[in-house]
Length: 437
Image 1 (cartoon, one colour):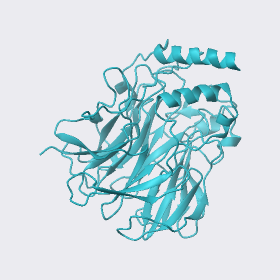
Image 2 (cartoon, helix red, strand yellow):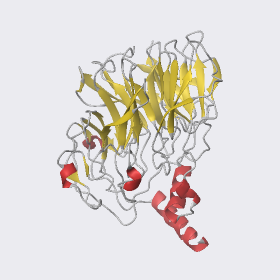
Image 3 (cartoon, helix red, strand yellow):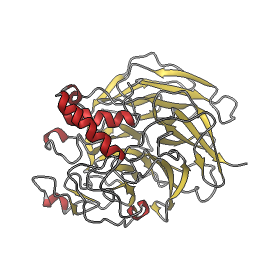
Image 4 (cartoon, helix red, strand yellow):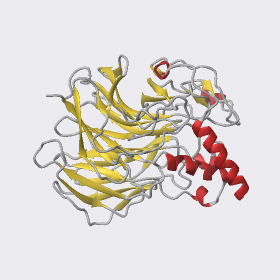
């Protein structure tokens, strides 16, 4: 095993520093309602081009688009991934990371090499397993108090308040906690609403959003693999969005074939659910674009058998042409390997045009593309309930001149003042984007 590990380490370093497979199209070609989808370019050794996580040097910060400013709303956090704004303006932050994975304990070569890559990207820190409450008492755009609202959780991620109940999606279950407005600490034990598919947890982030009337919760569950290479048995209930009845706790599959849905938001009609989805890897730097899409009740979106509609992935056996024939084409591609995670409707944002009506998207950044993609926050304009136009950069500069990650944006949310908040899990900062005076 030492010899194998030494060889793997050398191989990893080679692929990290120089990749034989490179993109032939700009990222923008893989964006929009009709992205370019060239032929797959599979290689014996996948492209590994992860940006090394280095954090922000004192005095540096991301770059906001023209007409916008940016400042640190809160810093010194522990891997902040997701955000939720309470009605009174308090901001909840899930300080969290992946739970221990059984496959890593097995000592497999692939898992070991994957761990090296994740560590380089800043994604191997132990999970703080808590939700922190931030409060800006003087409304100057900087949180001046913070407290631990909940702790001892299991890789918490999604949060939603329905009435006086705060729902939290752990890696393995949805819990509810009693909540009173202004409360800064919850000591009551959580009550399990329902279990969620867990175990291997290749994709561990479980997000949730409440229906506008509060009667339902929608929970996103990612796949347990890239393209079902370990069989479909371990994918039961995964690569899907679940609908949970709040009153009874009963759940049903709402939509399937979504490889790794994370961000969710309601369109302005308050009837159409949207999600941001991470698509599959190892088909080349130009494939497959991540996307955001409206979610149809009962809809199937292709994974693992096809991508972006009926484009068959020949790596998946046995094939399912019957399912491929029903695969829905996503509404809007977000670029290959951008790792688009955060999603927030502009809603009551006070950001000026052209950022007034559409979706903000947090792009965590690629590992399987040369050159790198993502590592920024973008805005997709809408006309009513439909994407309309070219995406615009909102916040950039997360990669330095050496290609190292000073930060990586994840969750995005609109705060009570109408500013955009961005969770940065490498910089350990919550950034606030607001109109320039």
